[in-house]
Image (cartoon, rainbow, N blue to C red; front, side):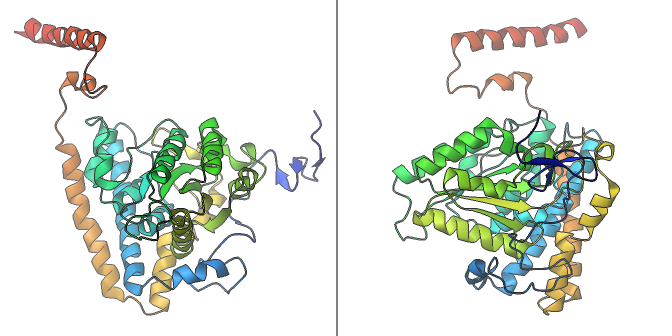
Amino acid sequence: MTISGASEGIDGVTHVAGHKLDGLPDVTDGGPDMVQLIAPDGSRTPMSSVNEPYMEALKAITAEEVRAMYRDMVLVRRFDIEGYSLQRQGELGLWPQLLGQEAAQVAAGHAMREQDFAYPGYREHGVAFCRGITPAQVFATYRGVSHGGWNPADHNFATFTIVIGNQMLNAAGYAMGVRLDGLVGTGDDTKDTAVIAFTGDGGTSQGDFNEAMVYAAVNHSPMVFFIQNNGWAISEPNTRQFIIPPYKRADGFGFPGVRTDGNDVLATWAVTRRSLDNARSGLGPTLIEAFTYRMGAHTTSDDPTRYREDAHVEAWKAKDPIARLRALLERENHADASFFDDVDAEAKDLAAGWRRSCVEMADPEMTAMFDHAYIDLDPQLRAQREEFAEYLASFEEASA
């Protein structure tokens, strides 16, 4: 089959418009359109036409708020490490790591207002943490002792979505409701509401994602699509998912798309803050692509050494989001050694409680799986529940 505009490069690999259709992607270069405010060495990047629209939003942030984001990034990384370790010890059934994506998630969490509503996938532990959800609540989900871990209404943060892409349609529907309820464009900062939905680069290939884009566009919904492009949809590289970057896909649906350096917490905060502000004011949806990298495995059932090159991982370690922000804080004298020591000590102290909360969780009653399927059990489910209860009781009788 011949692809229009395709040619074979000197490496023997087919290319379309400069994008490889086989082999490994160049996952370290975000390109000239990427918004970046902090370079990997912690210095400020030069002013450019790409960065300029977000400088106004950046003026609103204080050194104290930047220190708070640094703290949250460190705590979220420790939270993630504990989740990984607990799964390896047999305490959790599964754990999807976010190692390396802390800046993207903490930035988004800090950019939201209290009334905004978030729809996560299954890796958004960092956003959950910023919305006041505890590690114990997240662990309960992956330990299988909870039907969701938290009440979404308590945090304006939906439960994790394992079905890839489904959260996008849920968010699009909620955003339509927000608009119909008159909670957009009123000028009241405590009332106007935006909806933000998260997925990875692989999620953009799902039909649900594209249907949600259509729905949000035609309804002019107050919604932000937040894509964490970490280079791989499990073992499938970007080059086998799409031939244009995700942020450009928004053009085809009629609303703005922005690529931000997902390892730069200030750039991602400014882009997300501006996008959410636009959504609340009635300017419609925006797609954000946070260009980042998951340095760990997709989940604890995955072995990335089978498909990733060590050189890519090492290249991204040099772009570590926590080290980058620490370098900026030190360079600009916004934090001293005692601040960093205190944050590290806090993370260590909290981790002990997080581990204890997980291993001490009580197992639910086996019949609890029926309790929240519907508000009222229908006759068929009630009969199944009773039959299952009798089955469980038979083991007690046999051991008596």
